[in-house]
Length: 200
Image (cartoon, rainbow, N blue to C red; front, side):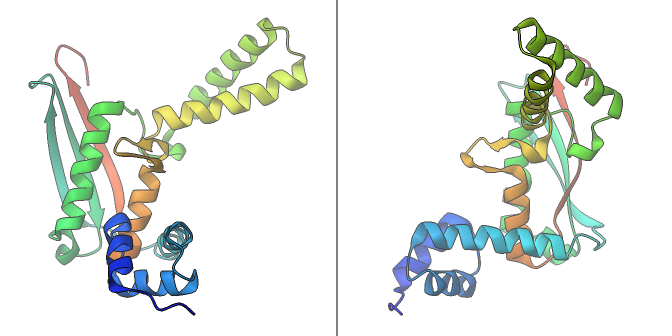
């Protein structure tokens, strides 16, 4: 196995925010391959998040962000399990990044399970009709409608949006990575976005 330099470990840590030992382990497992090590850490992040899914999160922060000369403002509540984690710079940075994301991308829901059934049915009906109007047969129109519904989720659901600072990651990836890093469940509870002159 190749010797893993501290410089390589530092690079991986800077890119992922994962702990020093986790970075070293991931690089050792992937023989120093940076891309594979990043992928490995992201998978572990998802696994840690799944393991902690039933934990209580009643600590955290409410982060505010004001953008565009005071025309757009957001508030987001980001939760964790302990006050200790809530005060860490990484956790606060994540809350700030999510508040910025909401200002820029204007999601409607935190997660897919919050989308009302009536909204899903209405969207599917619109997409089916569009596909049929394009001359597609019914079975193909159904598949197209499902594909367009996925795009709808990626636009309207915060957890499924691509992160504005790194399109290779979703907001869910960021939350999973923070969960893996701090060893606690991290969860976006709710948000609100104000745009001057519009109803929130």
